Amino acid sequence: QKEVEQNSGPLSVPEGAIASLNCTYSDRGSQSFFWYRQYSGKSPELIMSIYSNGDKEDGRFTAQLNKASQYVSLLIRDSQPSDSATYLCAVNGGPGGFKTIFGAGTRLFVKA
Amino acid sequence: GAVVSQHPSRVICKSGTSVKIECRSLDFQATTMFWYRQFPKKSLMLMATSNEGSKATYEQGVEKDKFLINHASLTLSTLTVTSAHPEDSSFYICSARVTGGGQPQHFGDGTRLSIL
Image (cartoon, rainbow over all chains, first blue to last red; front, top):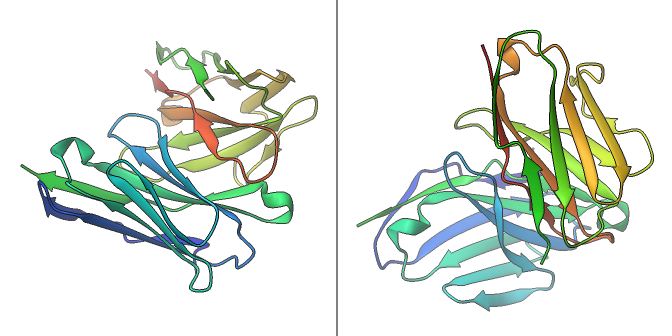
């Protein structure tokens, strides 16, 4: 079992729809969770951080965390073609929360 | 805040050349920096963790004599690819983290290395 799992996709949604990206993790002691966006040929860019159970909203993005289910998700409302990218889930765990494990990423295509 | 600068952005050089890549945290101090490698359409692969003032920790399968890492200050880490060969061509990305557990990594823009 991978430590951080994501569906590789591609996930294809029409413009204006909600894109839902999911991530599960194996370390129950994990405390910090992040979503990165990576455009083709570019480096990852941090878009959301979440530390406690529930929802966290930032503009069109909502991160959801459920520690009991070891599940974190990212919702993108009103998806735009410019949202087309690979989305990486990252989890900090281990002693002191210093170890970061990245998922392999989910490719998202938003069709105009 | 949390800006990481990586230089150069692109390198094209002949086989056998050594190439140095710099990674700087511009507005924060980074006790720990990370070096990744990424092939086209593949996942990030952690190569090594760079700790200020001590030796880097390399991931399994990464040759420490091939990929030399120096983290001499709280804002600068360097990766030197020694005697580079075509198979070393890749996208190299550094990241840095604000000191303290639970903080995210912030990435540089990456260096695209092409060895002829």
